[in-house]
Length: 303
Image (cartoon, rainbow, N blue to C red):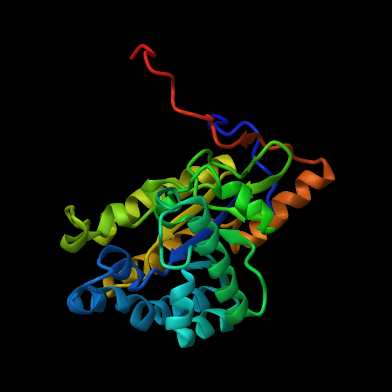
C-alpha cells in the first residue's frame, strides 16, 4: 500500500503522475565578478572553469534534451545574456525558456532595496533584448530573497518564482493582496551539493560520483511520481554538463521516461497550468504571505 503523502496535488495534464523540470542556472563568470570585483582578470583558471558552462556544457545539454524531446528552463543572469549571445540563441532555438536570475548574480538580501530593484529591472531589460519578451519566471541568485523580492516581482508582472523550498507541489506566495505561483525545489536536487569543489569560493566539499549524485535525484523523482508531486531540479552547466555527469543526466531522463506518465515542461508552462486550475476553481493550493515576520524578535525574548 502506498500512503498518500501529498494531500492535495494538482491534476497534471493528460493524466501524468508528476511534473518535471530539469532547470539550469547558467551563471558563467558572473560569479567571478561578484566575488572578486577588483581582481577578476587575474582569476583565469576559475573563469575558465565557469566558462565551460556556456561554451561546452550547454550545447551538450541541449543535444540531450533534443534527443529526448523535452524543453526545459534556463535561469540566466542578465550580464550572461549579453556575454554569451550565441549560447542564448541556441537555448531559444531548442524551444527552451529563459528566466530571470538577477543581473550579475547579486544576492537580493545583501542589496539595498534600490539596488535590488535596479538588478531586477536590468535583468528584465537584458531578457527582453535577447528574447523579445518579458520573463515569466525568477530565481533569486543563491536563492537569497529579501523581504522586497516578492512584491517587486508582482510589480513587474512575473507569473512564478522558483527560489523557495516550501512544499513538494506548487503553491501561492504573495503579499497582502497579490500572488504568484511558487514552484519549489530543494537543495537535495541542486547539483552544487554534489559536485561543487571551488577553493576560490571556499567550497572544499567531497565531489560525488555521478551515480551517487543521481541516486539522490532519482529517489526524489520516484517519490514525486508515486505521490503526484512536482520535481524541479537545479543544475549548473559548468558542474553537471561535464562529460560523465551529462551522461548521468541522460540516464536519469531515460529512467523518468521509462516510468511513463511524466509531464516534462518548462516552469512557465507548469505555472500557467497551475494558474489555470486555480482560476477554474478545480484546485486550491496553500498560500504563504511574505515576509514571514516584520521585524526581529524584541530584545529579551527567551531563547
